[in-house]
Length: 324
View 1 (spheres, rainbow, N blue to C red):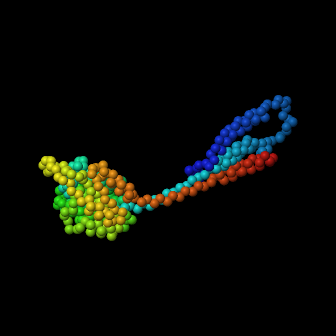
View 2 (tube, rainbow, N blue to C red):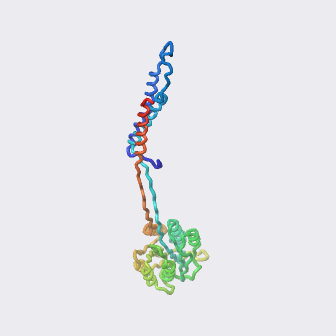
View 3 (cartoon, helix red, strand yellow):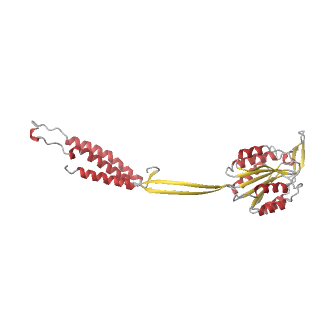
């Protein structure tokens, strides 16, 4: 009953200082009343015994102290507060479609484009604890590395293991997007999102990228495309560690049209790791998990208990004043 108690008028509690003053006054008063009287004989009093009122004399003062204390607490208006929170969490289904072609070894990102993308993706995944996320890798072909899962430990291991050279080289953007769509199109989530990251121009695959993007729009999937890479010459190292330069080639027009063909989609350009982190941060804010919180708060007045206690104490004191 008295859990989470607070007071509407707590300054009244300062009056509780009167109670110890009452005790001091009562003790001094009784000391004066009980001063010794010298008499020669007690025969004159006969067998006059003590009445019940006399035996309970000090109880009356105790009841008075209880009454005063209870009245002061009642004036302070004690209140108990009960609250309950109900949360309904609806996760968003997300597919990360990441380019693992040879050009992702470009060192305009540190240590290179793919490693930077992996680091940023891992940080993004860690911030989406209530969402199912899938991973699709593509180069000259595409495949699903991890289906939609809430087990982010498994997903993180797969992201960390991504590397170039495992797939036929090239950039099949349309196939990568189509594979991602197949992973998410049957989802019952309120929001379905594909984040497609590439650094090249579509030059392989059997599916036109814009056709795949239109299909994503029909399934109610929102597409964010991210073009990575700086403009101009980019430093690479071949398999023997020998440096060479290549011209950056990115079809931003295509990636923009693809994103804008879906409701709420958007194209982003990342020229370094910091800008890539900012892009994923923006997407993270846009696609935050929806949390519906219903709060129930109830404040109950508890002064009635103390008021009744005070009245009861006053009533008992009045009864004890009657000779019994």
